[in-house]
Amino acid sequence: MKIVAAGAVLAWLSVMVFFAGIVAPAAFTTLDREAAGRFVSVIFPRYYLGGTALGAVALAALVARAALGRLRLGDWLPLLLVAVMLAATLYAWLAILPAAHAARAAISHPGTLEALIFARLHRVSGALNGVTMIAGVLCLVVLGVRR
Image (cartoon, rainbow, N blue to C red; front, side):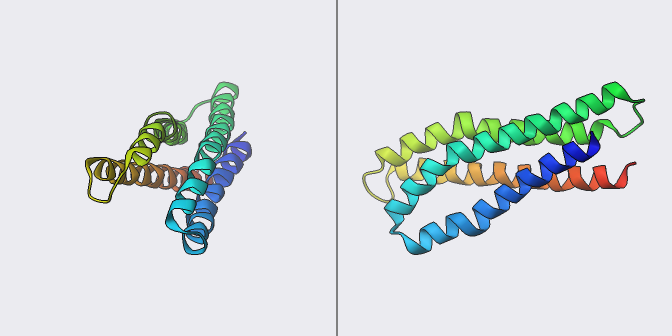
């Protein structure tokens, strides 16, 4: 079960790094800003759905591992980290993303209130993705260290 959980977290992190390091930069360097924004907006729901699915697999594997074996001190840490990853992803998907879409659609000019709201939501989304990535790396470290 530990290998399933670690594999799901590793796949989740891989998707996140691929999107943040390759897909989004390529979109914004190849397409005009408006088109790149629309492209990324279409990808995000699928990105969050994939993360949620992989998180659910990891969480289920960790819960099954705990249920099948004797829990040792510290076995709760990977469960907590995956729960944090899922919570951050779900909040970004279900709360931040719709608000960012609405603010982006309402932007008439740079510097308007809508533009400032969108920028703030974008920062929050980035922070949530950062938290998810850090928690994922920590989860892999803990799973790798513990036998």
